Length: 115
Image (cartoon, rainbow, N blue to C red):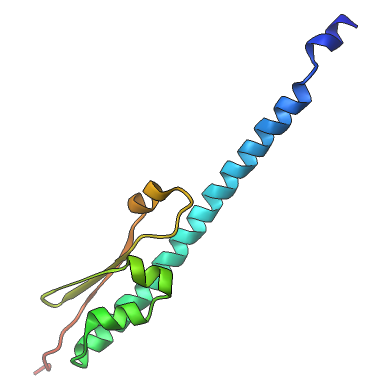
């Protein structure tokens, strides 16, 4: 039984490594879903900002009102000429990752009447 002594603890090591891999996979899946959700929210916020701008209201306020609390706090709304860009950092378990995964949506607004 000399071979059995060398294998002691192998199951424990494999279980710990398997659990760590499972956790890592869960964090990656969460991050992908959170980024996709943030992208969907930003699209709606950009559309709301465009409608507000066409109607002479504040695009920034409209974009933030259309976002849930966590996203409204992280939102950046920039209006330059006829363009409006809404950017949001998605929620993240690992803080610096959110900055790398910023999502944004842009719309072009024409407030003048067509001839």
